[in-house]
Each structure stands twice: as C-alpha cells, then as structure tokens.
Length: 301
Image (cartoon, rainbow, N blue to C red; front, side, top):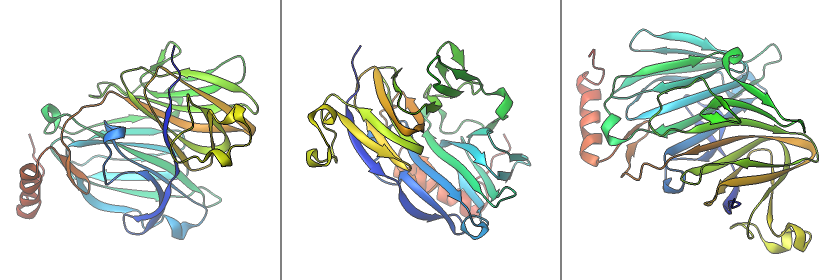
C-alpha cells in the first residue's frame, strides 16, 4: 500500500451564484485538470433566508452530470421535460444533463431557517455528451450507512466501499462519493483506487490529512513538530487535493471531523465550457449557444 501525497490544501472561496445565493466554491471554472473527471464543487449553506432564497432559476445544462446532496432544509427542482420534486435532508440527486436540459433549483430552509447542501459537477466523455437526460433521485433511507468498530461512519452515495455499493448507477466516470465521519482523536486509513483522482472537502470539525511530504501551500513553520511535517491541518470548508497512491490517512481533532471524499477515473479529454454547458470543442459550444437562441436546445428524442 502507498499513502497518497497531498497536492494542495485550500479554503473554499465565497461566491455569489444563481440569482444571488451566497455559497463557497472549492474549485471550478478554470483549469480543473487535476480534478478530472470533476469540474466544480460548491458548498451552499446559510442560517438566513436572504442568503439562499433567490435560488437558481431556470438555466441550461449540457454535457455534464450535476450531483446535489442535501443535509439541511430542502431543494425543489423542476425542468423543461416536466420533471419535478423536492430533495430533503440526506437525499441525493444525480442528474445527467446529456444533450440538454433546462431546469431550476430553489432551496428552502428548515424550521430554524438553516439550509445546507453541496453540488458537484462531473464531466461526461465525448461519446456520451449528447446522451438522453436522466435523473437518479435517491432518498436518504436508501443510502447505505456503515459504521466501523472505532466509530467511523461512512455513507456510500455512489460507488463501492467496505463491501457495500451506493444506489447511484451507470455513471460514466465510475466515481466513488462518500460522506465520512471520524470520531474525535481517531486516525483512519481509507482506500482510494490508485488510477483515480481524489479530493476531500471538510465541512465539520477539524484534523490532519497525512502525506508523504509537506503539501504545497502549507508552510513548514506553520507545523508544530517534525512529526506532523507529514500532515496537512484542515478545518471546516477546506479542500484537500490528493496526489497518486492507494490510501489516504486522516486524524480527527478533538471535535471529530466530517468530510466528503470523491474519486473518479480521469477522462483525459479536452474541456470547453461556457457556464453550465461543457463540451470538448469551441465549435460544440457555439452550436449549443445557437440552439439556445433558436429554441432547439431541448430535444424531444
């Protein structure tokens, strides 16, 4: 076994999206080759209705898959094909936009006004860019939740882990998407397939991700002893991008740590994008823009 190194550690950045939703963006809309097949990751949460109520009104998608995971509050969705529904705490929606869909997502808070969710974009390979759109709407009770002897808890949203397989099926990049909680003071080693890019996003607690050497962006003088020069300190809203290897190791702080762990097989294809439309060439983007203007973007077939 080889422990993965750490390429970078960085806080997610405040961003306005949709009609004025305040969120934090961990990565996206730039050079995302190190995250391939993933394109973007947003953490949208708020304690005030004004932070998120404007939502994400009608907008197009093509050439990607959008993965929405709700922890608090709810998200109502509708689309141009007549689909609609409400995602509630613990639910996940894996939407394959394929050749094109226009939809809206409108978040709402719980009784205390809290809203929390994540959206991850996964690229589609060229051969599937123009596939038919589809949804996989998964309810919280249908997501496997595993607990180890040391109190480590893992929800398997997609892919296989510890002998269980998540309910999302037929995804091109064959990703694994996990919600991991580690108890205070515990150190845990988790397997990640060696041929996949991988990242972790911390959203509760704090701790250290161990590495074979000091990660980029972490100054040695910021690390207390030689023993933890090989570890990257992280806390709420921090992103960790891993290097190659087949394991990651994390030590939880005094309040424990909870993070999303995503890994996927790189597509290695050119990426041309314009907002939520992601193709392989500029010519394909131009075609999508023409279809949006002339009303032929949504195909009934």
